[in-house]
Length: 258
Image 1 (cartoon, rainbow, N blue to C red):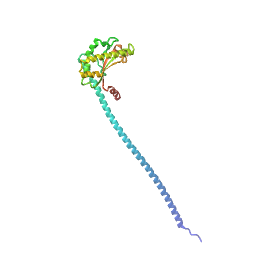
Image 2: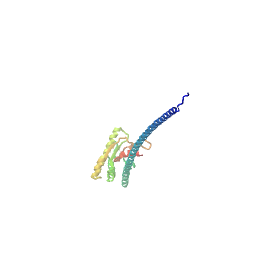
Image 3: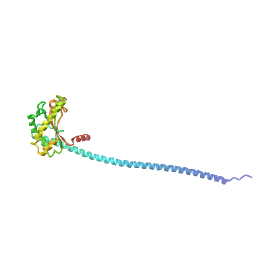
């Protein structure tokens, strides 16, 4: 008798196989989904970090922007201060020019520095530091105009120093000329102090004493002629200068601003 084939068994095996395949598909899908979720989480974390970096950068930018704004304000203030001081110096030079011109003086004032130069031969004999009568007369005419402008109520607070400089030519050694130029500057300074008693009031005299300096420069700053050679005659001189408060700092800032 032929054996009867069991179709139900085959169907059960087929179904079991299908279930296994479906299980494997679901398992693989779940694993892929888990990997995708992990990748998404990583992407989210990376985006979060990028956002934090951007926020930090934005805060840093705001700080830098604020500092730049403060620096610009400070720069504007310094520029205004420079212009003010330059304006004061120009005003003093202009006032001196007008006063000397009104008194028919032939003195020349350096338009940039305000320096006034006297030939040493007017003040001193060769290799001497004692003022000649001619030199005293020149100072008697010069000092009332000069000091009354610099120590006026309008300019006195701006003037830090009134400087008298002695300069020599290149004859002789540097040390010898340094001593000579210093002695000559002091002679002019002493006479100026004595003369100021009849020119200035008590407060102005006190200011003059505090602001006055006398320096000997030997032959460290000679004057050259048009051919580039040292002019001994012009190098022998006495200069009157003035310095404004904070002028050195202003000159440095002015150079930086350029």
